Length: 273
Length: 215
Picture 1 (cartoon, rainbow over the protein chains, first blue to last red):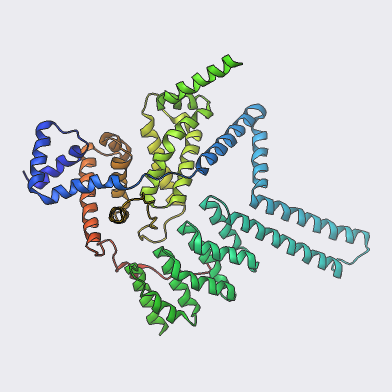
Picture 2 (picture 1 turned 135 degrees about the vertical axis):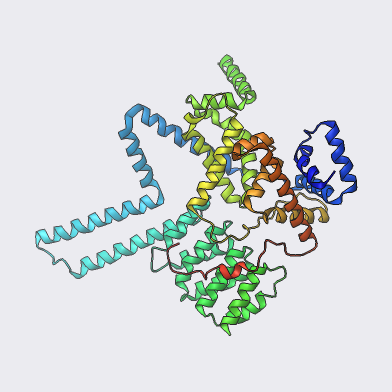
C-alpha cells in the first residue's frame, strides 16, 4: 500500500476507530515506512505537552461575573428598565474612567459656579489672580487624579484593562515620574505583548526624558518577543540614540536571535552608519 | 435544619453527576448558579484550548471568562437536546475570532512564545517538549487549531466537522496534513535549522512602526 492511502487511514488509526483488518494494514506499512511511522510518533509525542492550569483567580473572576450578572437581572425584574439603566450609569461612575469623568464634571460645575457667583456679586473681577490660582490648583489636582487612575489600571489582572490604562496615559502631555516608571516597568515585564507594545508606543512620545530614554533602550536586551524587539529597534533608530549603534552591534550577537529580528537590527545598523 | 442540609448535599451530588445538557437547561431556565458546575468542568479544557492556540496565558484567561459571560447572555439560544460540548466550543471559537477582530495582531509573526510549564523531568525530555511546542506554534493557526481540537480537547472527528462546518473527510485530510507539517517543523528544529515559516523575506513587508499616532 502507498503512503497516500495509509495517510487517509491514519487519522482513524490514531483514534483507534479502524477495523482490525485495516488496522493491520497500517501497522504492516509502518514497519517498512519510516516517514509514516514518524507521523504516528509525533502525534503520540504531543501528549508530552503539559496540561496547563488556569490561575486560581480565574474561579473568583467567574464568581464575580456571575454575581454581577445575577444582580443586574434581579434589579431588572424588580424595578424595570429604568432601574437597570441607573445601575449601569452607577457602575460606570464607579469604574476608574467614570470616576475621573465624574470628578472632572464636578470640577467644571464648581469652577463655573464660582466664576459666575463672583460676577454676580461684583466683588471680584473674573480673572483675578486668586481665581486663576485656584483654577490652576484644581487643574493640577485633576491631573494627579488621572495619573492615579493610570497607575491603578496598570496593576489590573486583565490584559485589556492594563491596555486601557496605557492608552489612557497617552491623553496627558506631561507624565508624572511615577507613571513613567510604571510604564517602563510595564514595557519590561508585562505578560502580554499587546500591552508591552502599547506601553512602548506611549513612552515613545517622552523620549526627551532621560529616565524614559534609558528605560526604553535598556529594555531591548531583555525582551523575548520578536514584535517588541522590532518595535524597540525602530524606536532607537528614530530617536537617533547616541549609543544605538553600539547597543545594536552587541544585540545582534545574541545567540538564537530570531532571524527576522536580526535582519531588522542589521538594517537599522546600516541606517545609523 | 439537618434534614435541609442533607437534602442540599444530595442535591449538590446529583448536580455534579448530571449531564452537561441537563445543567445547561437549568441555566437556560434561569438558574444561573448552576453554571458554576459547568465552569468547573470546562474552564480548564477551554483554557488549554486557548493557551495552546495562542500561546498567551493572560489572553486565554480573558477569553475563558468571555465564553462564560456569553453563555449567560445567550443562554436562550441553547437548543435543548443538542450536545453542550459542541455549543460551548462554537462559542469559544467565536470569542477568539471576535477578539482578533477588535484587536488585530500587528504583524503575522509567530505569536509570543510562552514556554510551557515544564514538569520536573530529565533535561532531554524537557528539550523535546520545548521543540515540540515551538514546532506547534510555527504552524498556521487553522492547522494548529485542528490538532489542538483533536489531540488535546479530544473531540471526535465528526464533532470537529460540525464545529468547523466541513465534511468528515475534509477533517481527516486536514488532520493528516497538519501532522505532516508538525513533523517537518519538528525535524527541522531538531536539526537546528530555521523552518520554512521563519521567512526572512517578511522583513521587507513590515513598515517601520510610526510612533506618536493613535494605536
